[in-house]
Image (cartoon, rainbow, N blue to C red):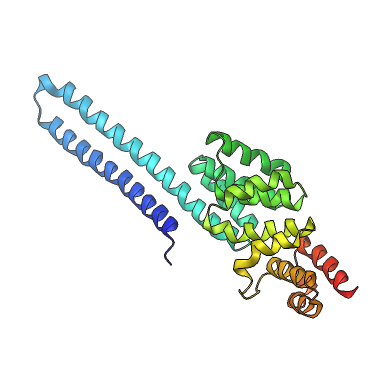
Length: 258
């Protein structure tokens, strides 16, 4: 199924960029025509023609400058997100910083904050995310909400985590990840039936991710299916697990052996 949200965002971006450079073209042509007109005007109209030509030139230059800065900011932000999703946090951080230098947008500020947060520098990252939200009158992007919510989840601060993750789940990009995190919360609160209800639409899906394996294995264990639970955990070597999941896997393996 086509991603309508992504298609709409890309169309809006293309139209916005086209609009900026069309305006630049219009004022550039106007400025050229006015300068040519100035050379042919009579002495009485020279000053007026000069002011018109100069004004059009300044407007064209301003549109060109700000258009280039904004476009470069968006370009660096785009490649920053590509690096981020590829797991290259330091490269992503550098690209987001470059984006912010060209165009100091709240999105670039929030993206930089997320990189710092996930790099272990929460004291620097969280204020940047909050500052970005403040510039949008308190609204965070799904990207900011998800990773800030994920951070609070890893810190055991569920009360702060849940509202952020709920907000992020409205974006299809993060909805599946949020379902899994909420299922883990229910399991750790000893509510396997609630976790099963959350995961019910996805239980037939192939288990390919460590968090998914942890959830399904926990539900299998709750049903007394120890062998199936163990088989799911064995798909992921301990050395391949992130610190967040390594402890959880070890505890679940211990429960299976009891």
